[in-house]
Amino acid sequence: MDSPALLWFRQDLRLADNPALHAVAGRPVLPVFVLDDEAAGVWAPGGAARWWLRQSLAALGAELAMRGAPLLLARGRAEIVIPALAGSIGATEVLAGRLYEPWARERDRRIAEALAAAGRRLRLCTSAVLREPAKVMSGSGKPYAVYTPFAKAVAALGEPDAPLPGPERLQPVAAPPPGETLGELGLYPVPGEPDWAAAFGTLWTPGEAGAQARLARFLSGPVAGYGAQRNDPGMEGTSGLSPHLRWGEISPRQVWHAVRRAQPGDLSVSWPFLSEILWREFSYHLLWHRPEMPERALRERFTGFPWQPDAALLRAWQHGRTGYPIVDAGMRQLWRLGWMHNRVRMIAASVLVKHLLQPWQAGAAWFWDTLVDADLASNSASWQWVAGSGSDAAPYFRIFNPVLQGEKFDPAGRYVRRFLPELARLPDRWLHRPWEAPEAVLRGAGVTLGRDYPRPVVGPAEGRQRALAAFAALGGGA
Ligand code: FAD
Image (tube, protein in one colour):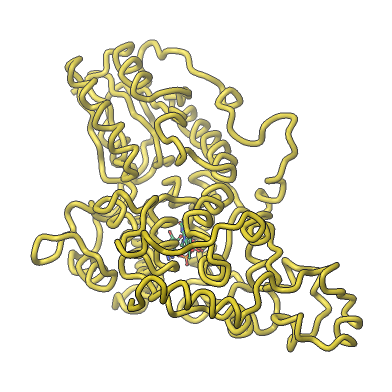
């Protein structure tokens, strides 16, 4: 077949192991990206993701141009833009990686209809996950609701297929229509506005090459100690691949196979890491089968939870001013770098929904706006997991103590001191509980509570009691 094809890049911003791109080999191709905030609604990319997307599109555009088929950028409703572009180049097919977000599924359904009416076809390829969520079902033909049997079922399917090579050259369509410039898409930074993402570039290199470099760095060191070090936020013990995976600059099977090559033999050696890739996979499975997950509690009874929305408490948490050092360090890391260590995400989220009794949706919305890896599946599933309202969630009554968590996972205070320099001179013994430190110790460390650093907005014991009382009001039980 040598009729032109429209290749629609969405959340698979890479050339290697891109099944949609692979499928157009030998045909004239028009690569397109459409920024469609209208269809996504509240789930349009948040601020930090818009910073990422801009850099990532620049990288993808350069790679495609080098191979002979430049990326066309457009802004507006994909439902209108895609069929119109397909018509203008006489494409018989539009190819893309499948998306799992409810709004995107609905949009794809409508676009497929519009294309079919004009004698064209929308072809969706598996690109963002190892296995299609619709194809991993329990023995009784139902979707999985619990992680462990799900992970076992995926592992039992064997190794994922080997990744596909990227193209050397691409054949452009004869007369590509004009598109917009990257600047015209209105991503971040916005000219004339303060650049809150100034430090992001110190940690991240968006784009496929950046993703491969990040993977290589992980494989050359942290992967070996991952099982033991992944919970230490003060060191680089994890891969940092989440934003690259979120934008599809690298595929999960590329990561899977690279880790398997680095640690050949029994799967159990790499299991601590691969099982996290499967948590991502499980989140997509849940989102596909429970599309209400981003908005509503998956456990019915949690819809009546007596949250106590309080703008001041939410703001204190967002700004890293709760008075709990491990939480505040995490929230400042998030603001400064667009990312937070997983262990600290769990503690910070737990304090918000339990000690502060704020709805998990409020926390998820803040993460959506501030994380470079903000991903509808993983973010909603993880928030519901922490809140106790999710599928296979931590029971609500299991309440993290932010002081003990800090002391356990950041005992030498490397993490807290990095992001809360105002506490840097406090001795380890008091670092995670400054309000209990003797006055002389505080003075010696140059800390005046209430001035340099807040007292806890809700005390640890009081917060725990409030959470348990709210849970009891719901009728108890997990
Ligand atoms: P690694 O430890 O190196 O793990 C490798 C990959 O596995 C990650 O890149 C990620 O794709 C996946 N992964 C790891 N842990 C999880 C998990 N618990 N759930 C799903 N996938 C996982 N992750 C996101 O990608 N986007 C989000 O929006 C997001 N929101 C979260 C919100 C909360 C409240 C919590 C507790 C966790 C959230 N996570 C989210 C999961 C996890 O924190 C991040 O994936 C992880 O910290 C990313 O760092 P890493 O790439 O170094 O992870």
